[in-house]
Every structure is written in structure tokens, then in C-alpha cells.
Image (cartoon, rainbow, N blue to C red):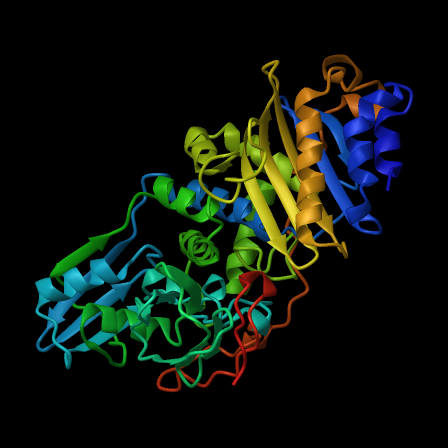
Amino acid sequence: MLSGLALLLAGSAPIQAVQPMAELLQHPSLKGSIVAVSVLGEDGRVLLQNEDATRVMPASNMKLFTVAYALHRLGPEHRFRTRLFRVGDEVWVDAVGDPTLTSEVLRDAGRKLGVRRHTRVRPLQAYWPGVPQGWNHGYLTARYAAQVEAWSVDRGGFEVWADARRIWLRHDHGGVRLRHVPDEKPLRVSYDRVGRSVTVRGSLPKEPQRVIALASPDPSEAACRALGGTEAAPPQALPDREPDLVLESPPLSRIAAMCLQPSDNNIAEHLLLAAARTEGPLNPEDPYPQATDRLVRFATQVAGVDADDLRPWDGSGLSRHDLVTARSLTRLLQWALGQPWGEVWLQAQAQAGGEGTLANRLRGLDFRGKTGYIDAVASLSGYLRRPDGRLLIMAVVCNHFKRPASEARQAIDRFVEELSRATEFGTTLEPGRGDASSPVPFAGSGLAVGDRLAGSGVHGLAPRAWPHRRDEPTDAPADRAQRTLVRNR
């Protein structure tokens, strides 16, 4: 594992210069794993590297590519505009894929349009792939793996809540039945998404708490119900006139933070598809092959990533088929910081000790960036401002470790902390002679299209076509990190 590092620093730095890297690579939790590292100076010169050209699963660090692509194609001031038309006794919807629509927004819109329970709502969706390509079926009951449809509400999910008196569903518009079976054990949840039933077993808590967030059985139907009506078949075309009501999202500058800071998978998928649609139509039932090819073209031809360094299968990193290199992540981070929207990009990142996924990590450090985790994958990429004022651009991606993810995260955090306070950094980690003194080489063009199967089977679930919208396989258990049991039926 030290070969890449040795090649970089041979003959140019004493051994103490690589102490942060050595500690990371020798950490017991990472024994036998792939540890891909890239650390650049603000000017893009390589300071540290290890297996930085090895393709690895990035987990949610994939969102960095997606959000950069969206900001580049749409601009930070872009707002999603969902147009609604009153046509006789019906409401027709131009559903462009706003990922920020909430129950409250749609409920208010329904009141303004005079929607009643039996009002037929006809959404014309820009896309409706359902499950993105490569997603594990075991994720699909959890809201973090909600189905992707251009007409959806509350990011495709609902919540189970409990207090000392009762259990209830919040933001359920899918007709899900709820049952509580009391016993003396902690609360556990069984969710049959196909059968639309949730069973909660256990004793009620003394204080109100959210028990779990689950994926909606049918996002489009849920949005129609949130509006106050009943879903009906989409229209062939929308009226050629001004809409009766327009729902505008927050600007993309805010949505980027809503995606990156809490690491929201559903928002990331919508941003990928929205950005890709600016380059031409997408197959609405199976948009991912086209969308990911366009993402690669952006990364290679615009951001300067090497064509061999990136193979995306989705926009969020939930697919284990996603592959990136550590050097592609630092190249993207360096490029994005120099864009007109660079400050928006920086503020959209999670901040150490602040809100988001870094709230309890790297406290006391001036660090902004993106975390990532799926089973046997931990990643962290971002910007570290040292006490001496130097800015480091870094990426660490660990794959195939057997120990708990918390230990891998601790090893990564320790590495960042050592980079921040290394007293010899200003001299001994300066690029040496030979190849190490040259900027990181990146190709300026070319595509890296993954070896995908053609057609909808690549998604794991076939796209749903009207009227067979609910022909879904049985759901497998959600990821164990949920800490609440979700079982098959």
C-alpha cells in the first residue's frame, strides 16, 4: 500500500514528512483494505498520494460530481418551476422534478386550486425511473433509497412517530396502514411496502420521537394525495396557455446545501437528471445511461478529470457500481472552487462541527467537505484550511475494510487532524524533484462509459408503466445502520 507514496517522495523528504499517511495506512481498522488518498495544494500540485489512480467505490462522495454538474449546467439561481393547470374538474401537472416539494406546499396549492378528494390529478412527469440503476434491493424500504419520480413529495418518503400515548404516521399520503403491538422491548418496525402496512412492536417512549423514515409505496400517487386529489393517467400534452398556479423551488444554491450537508440521496438523483436534461431529452423510464454518460462528459471535458477515473451509475453514490479515483475527487474540488459559483459550492459543503454529516466530526478544524458511507466503504473529501493559512484539497476513500465503519472514520479523521498540525508540512511535504513537482496530470477530454447492460434491467427493478405502477418485488431489509428493524413480508 506504500508504493504510490514511496514513488512520490523518494529522495525528496525525510520519513517524518509522511507520518500522517503512515498512520492512516497502518491503522488496524484498515488492514487489508484499499486506502486511496490524494492531497493537493491550492495550486493543484500533489503533496501526498496513495493509490490515487485506483478506482474505488466513493459512496456519497459521488454527490460532489452530481452537484458540480448541476451548478455548471443550471446555475446557482436556477429554480424548479412546477406548473399546475385547472382543466375542467381536473388538475394537470407539469412535473419537472422539483425535489423540494413538501406536503405543506402541495396542500396549500390544492386549496388555491379548489382540489377535492375526488378531483383527478394528471401529472405529466419528466422522468419516472423508480429505482436507480445498481441499487441494492435491501435498501428500498428506507427513505434514503426512495424511488425517483419527477412528481413526488417529501423526498419520496414518510415518517413513523411515537410518544407516550400513541404511534402515528407523518406525511403519509400513500394509504399505508399502521398497527402497534405493545410489548416490553424497544420499538421495532416491520414495513411491507407492497402491501402498504407498517407494524410497530415495543413499548412507547416517554417523549415524542421519530422512530424511522420509510420510502413511500408510490411517490407520484403520494404527491397527488398531498395535493388533495386522486391520481389519474397523465395527459398527452399540457394546455398551451399560462398555468393557473406555479410552484417555485428555492434556488439551486440552497438545494445544493440541502443535498450535500445531510447527504440526501433523493435530491442528488433529481439534480443529476435535471442537469442531464439540459443537454437533450432523456428516456423517461430509463434515463440513467444517458444521464451518467453526460455526467462523465462534463467531468472529463469541463472539469478536467481523467477519462479513466470515473464510472457513475447514479447521482448519489448509493450504487456499489459507482467508481471514482481519489485524484478525480481532488481535481473536481480544485476546479469547482475556481468557478463563478465557487463560494456557493463551498458554503454548500458540510462544515466540521456544524450542521450536517460533520456535526460530530473534526471539531476545532477549519474543514468543509463531503462524507460518504455504505457497507465497507468510508470516504471524506473536501477543503482543509491549516492554522498557518495554507489550503489543502484532499480526498480519502477506503474500500473493503472488515471492521466497523466508525473505526474507519476515526482513522480518516485522525489523518486530517495530523495534516492540520504537522509542523514539518511547510518544508518536507513540499513537492520534490522529478514527477512529484509537476501538476497532477489529467486528460482534458474523452468519455468513460461504464460497462452497463442495455435496457431497464440495469435498475434492478423494471420501470413502471401506466397502469401497472405497483408491480414491485418484495422489499428486503433496510441497511443495518437504520438501527430499527425493517423486515420483509
